[in-house]
Amino acid sequence: MYWLTAQNLYVWRLILLSVFRKREALLHHYVPDFLPHRQEELERLKKWFEPVLSEKVNMKVHIYGPMGTGKTVLCNRLGRYLMDEAERRGVNLKFININLAYTPKPYYVMSSLMEKVVGNPGLGLGPEEMLINIVEKICSEDMKLVVALDEVDTYIMEKRDPKILYMLPRVHELDQRAAGRISLIYISRSLKWLDRLDEATLDTLGRTAAVKLEKYGPEEIEDILNYRVEEAFKPAAVPPEIVEFTAQISYRCGGMRYALELLLGAGMIADSEGSSTVKADYIRIVHAGIPKGANGAIYPDELSIHKQMLLKAIMDGLRSGGGPYLTFEEAYDLYTVECESQDKDAEDKETIQSYLQDLKSEGYILLKRREGEVLIGMEYPFDRLYEDLERAMREALRRP
Image (tube, rainbow, N blue to C red; front, side, top):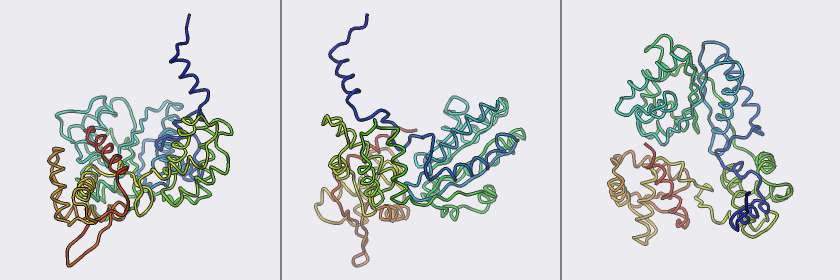
């Protein structure tokens, strides 16, 4: 006989009284069945990839647009469709999404791909040897791959080795049986990264179709939120005016990811307060607590590890110095110390100068010149940002 303990009763009480019914539907990496205001793009991608399912051909596609426009969720929804449709048709197909922002070298990209295809990360092998193993696996098992290279612009703009972009489209040169077996999706905020590639790599990319995603308007954010609210919350837990309020705030501060974060946090406050509904004050509390920069919400987990270390060095310097600005030399010295503490090789000064421009454009820092000297400051309090940054760095450093 099953007896309810006090702890079990407490857990059941939390479940029964919670405003949530499927909390994970508010996580930014969740892939819903339906994509409001992205169904047209999804249907277009399905048509483009139909020959991948029915014939021995591959496809190369760009999906690009500003942050918060649904690039990754659109790509992953396509991947799920392709996997389901392949299974229905008896086609052996894998969809794999690799975030290049967390892979500093081709070795790590290929190791991640090999682990997902072959079942082991290929420790001790070089990228070329790993690719040979991958090709042998897909040929011997009559397998097709659709590989999404997420944040490819970050990878290239930070001057990382572009060899991976040259190797993957040319697998047929290793084994003719591999022709048409690997399709590629390049996900980026813009197509400017293509300007950094040499002619040989550009030629390898060849003709590539493209889907551009525009920024969501407030009404579109509201539509998407209504769909997610229906999935995530119990009926009547989030009144329509709260959805509209959340959409208006989020449009100015960071788009869909920000909106989902507001609702998730507000729902958790409702549970802790014993409220059956999400209230405007709960949205305001979460809104006030999310780190912001000049352009709205900022998410340090989306930065590369070197940008994270640079940002941490800047905040450490501003904290210890107490003044409004650091010089470039001071920031660079602190950055190199941070690299040493994390057992990472520091980037050169020219690269760090480009990272500073990126951090400025993304709203993290202020830059100014005084008597020919570059000064670095921050506009907003950064205690919460510092905590989020440290957590993001720990997660990034745990990755291979």
